[in-house]
Image (cartoon, rainbow, N blue to C red; front, side):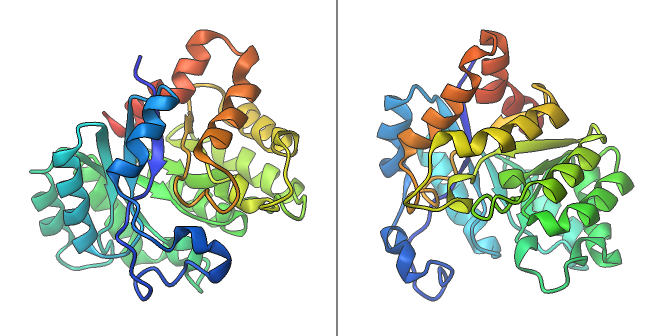
Length: 276
């Protein structure tokens, strides 16, 4: 079974395009490319990765496709298209010629309208994704989980995956609302959850592995071992933790699980979800 990191990013740093990188994230103010992560993957026995959207631009899809053509360890790409566009089906038909593109994502967490995902034009876009057999990554905050549940329920045949556990407020130790809403959405079996991004929701310079255990507990209790996927969120994790530290959190928590269950988390479920 391949070990897969199902959530990595690459970019050529641009202060305008990457304006979300603040001064306290100064470590991210440079290019991050395949050559930077390849030795980390090898050190931690990761065979491959899935490359995830950063910017809301189809130009980035082309950039990712070029990198994937040059680096065989990039097994899949989650890109971006305007799901509300009138010509969406035409654009998706073009991407059918690029088999490494397995799904798409929109930065829903930044939408002022927290119900953006329930707009009729957005839902028409999800209908198109389903027709073309593409996955959809839900990048949301915990306050959007009830709306995401409504979206998922409307499309029982569309594969969804929640990125970063829907970003619970780990820093504030808030768990009750998030846990309840996560359980509610997990009752629909077309949605997976990605165990990623936790370190950046904690106090960056003052965390211990144990503070994440209640959140991982809730994910495993809700989704079981067949619908959870590991992702490092590298390099976005770096202000809070190294690549090795992120993997160590997961390996420590799941050390008592069976080998088969660990293989599902660290690759098998990603292969199933993304069709790798």
